[in-house]
Amino acid sequence: MRIKILLLGMFLGLGLMSAQAKDSTYVARQVLGNNIKKVIIGDKNITQIEIMQGDSNCIFYYSKDKIKALPQLCKIEKDQLNVNSEKDMEGVVKLVLRNNIELLEISDGSKVMVTGNFAFKSKESKIKLDGFANMKFDNNLIANIITLDLKSFSTIAADSVDIDSLILDLEDYTTVLIDEGHIRKVLNIDKVGRFSKVKISTEECQYSVSSSPDEEEAVKTLKTIGEKVINWADKRSKGGYWCTEFTFGFGAFNWTDDYFAMGATSENYQLAYGTAYILELKKRYTFRGNWFMVDFGIGYESDVINFDEGIKYDKGNFIVNTNVDGITDVHSKMVARYVTLPIMFNIKMKSLFVGVGVIGGLNYNNSRTGVETEYLSVNPENGYTTEVFYNSSYPYFYPYKVDFRAVFGFDSFHLFFQTSLTQFSDVKQLYPYRIGMMISL
Image 1 (tube, one colour):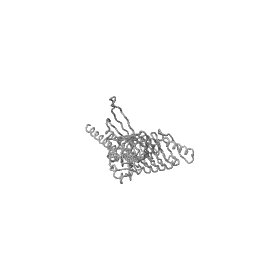
Image 2: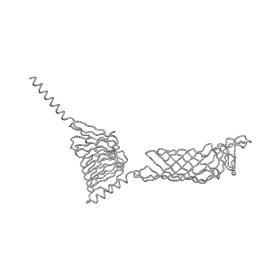
Image 3: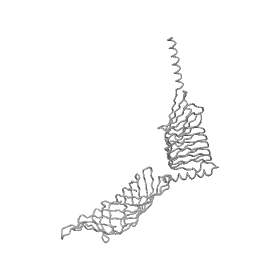
Image 4: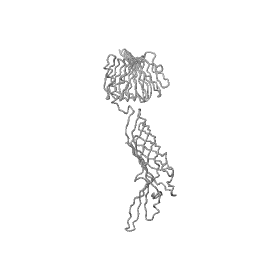
């Protein structure tokens, strides 16, 4: 009796092991490399196809049959991956792709499920569905500029999206279903094929319209809503817009020669230090793409030149004040003022800002333009010092200037270099340059 029970147990154990072996799932894996930009899923012979996003491109095949199907399933040509089975395959194919894919094409009759968030990080990307193909994003579809190229009787659906620009290229009898998310710009919505259904429900737009040649009002409604979506989008996403900018600049001033001189005298006056002050009000035009800009406007520039020696300008001559008895602590400076016309050409890449341009300037004289001298003199009668201010105009400023300017920085803070292409004075060939910083508001 015990022997019979033992034999029965052995048979039951073997049966369970056999059943478990039949229910086992075998996995085959193949690494595809990281240079793939295009993916074409080529047939309806595979039972189930799933796509997910990961750090590397690879493919898995889950099957109850212990077979090596992947070498026949995948073919790589340069940057293109073809997934195509020549025979019916019972199992699940899971394709893991990086975010640099530019084209995802689903061939006739294939059905693909995309699980988890999927992002197209390239500037422009495309999803192409051939006839009777079906694609479903069960989470968030993220893209910059993406085109949905759908052939007749194909369908694409997404639970959520985050897209800057959506371009529709839909033939007759196609379906696009988007449940929620953000779409900042929609193009070609008035060119949807006949008998097609476009249903989009996002924060920017809500509409559900079927187009038909027998439903003229539906077609007009679809076109009107499409234009409304574009008008609601941020104007900067379209490019070609104007804005106003105020710039303040401050920098060090110097010139290419090491002294300043007048032809009527033999003295050479050394530059102690110089400062430049810049104010500009500009209009900026940003071209489509938001990376190239042109600035032009009007501004003011003041160049203050401080001399080592105390001097004044009197009747066509420079006079050294330190040679006069009873005068101490002499400070002299020359001030040149300009009305400017800046023209700048700028490139912005994310927060990095680079620009070059030309600054035209017209010199003008007034009571505060020229040589200014401030010193202390001793009053012998009462024994205290008196502060005296002396100002005299300098008539030899070059009447106009043309400067070259280069700027580099981040967002609204820039460093600049500006050098004169014309000389500073009629008397001596001095070509000033300025190095400093600018803040734009």
